[in-house]
Length: 482
Image (cartoon, rainbow, N blue to C red; front, side, top):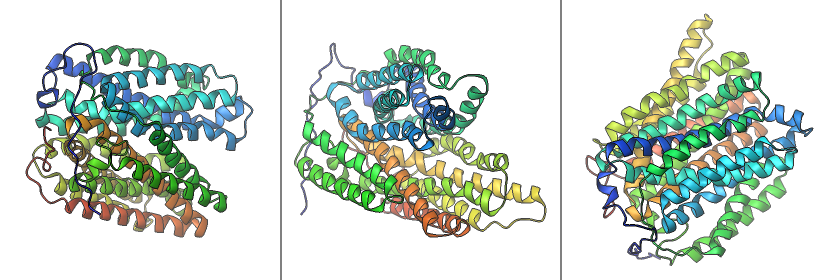
């Protein structure tokens, strides 16, 4: 049954003072724009860097708090769960009361929870702190992308999204090294305490964020609960499916029930919690599907490659880390160029080309032979890993731009939430796929199949992007008022 498109809810400012005049058209004036960008990118650095830093510290945390490694993993799991559960509700709350308010509140909660983590006397205390950090992070991620739309003029939005992608890639790449360096000179608690002075600087810059009026939309408590049930059961079920198949399958079935109930409840709403209204747009819908496929391939590839290097090609731990570095560095290199091109060329073509290069890099990594001379092999694999990262960088920025600009300005928060949800969903599916392969096959075969499957997923993402069509020179037909 075809559901007719509903008109967007009328904007009803809820903030004090007059709203800024048409902030999505020309962005902020330059001095204020720079401070706003500092706040947005600084917030992203904090939440992304903290994820990888904490993961590096899990063995030290387990030893210091007298916990088992399995229990210590909950330090990472609690954070991930809280993030994925809060993405869509935080986006909806931002639309109700103003994006900058929820972004700033989420960042403040993240910093306060960092203090709680730094002072944690026990593992349960630390897990609670990490959960609160995840709630804050789940507010920063989607609303940061939404606020970019009101910070930069539309003609420069691709470059702004590229800076965001570059920041994410840089923080992800630097996280393990920063965490390891801090652990060599300080206690693990300083990994969280360092967020306090950095967070204070970013919070000060948040005063320059664009003030976007809310829409006075209502928030449905039952829908928020169903959303939490769906994502929590999905993540936990996927995590447990390999070790306890019956329990994992039961959780996934419960996730499906929650998902169906959530969609049925939200389908008639004008501004649903799950952005079903945006998914009626073919361009937006195809961008979401492509994002899930590409991030699934990216995650599966980055998980399979270290095992390939360590167990198949007999590289050491240090060599493996160095050989993997070209991937995030290439993403950082590609992002600014992809951003400029996405402001001038059709995003469907850019996404398809980037996905094809990503697939080529992954496929060649799976078949690279051990050369007679180690330096020749090292050079070859480094080039191929960089090629894959380059392709991913050229896909990510144009695809995010297309998603954001195919949503009305008042639904920018929902678009940001959908983008973050698609990314985490794809990464979860990629991790699950690699885990299933490792359970079913020997390591050598599992990594070969994993890299091959990653390449196929990247090709699917590129093919889905092409279904959008060229859509003009500026990345597709924009939503009304965009």
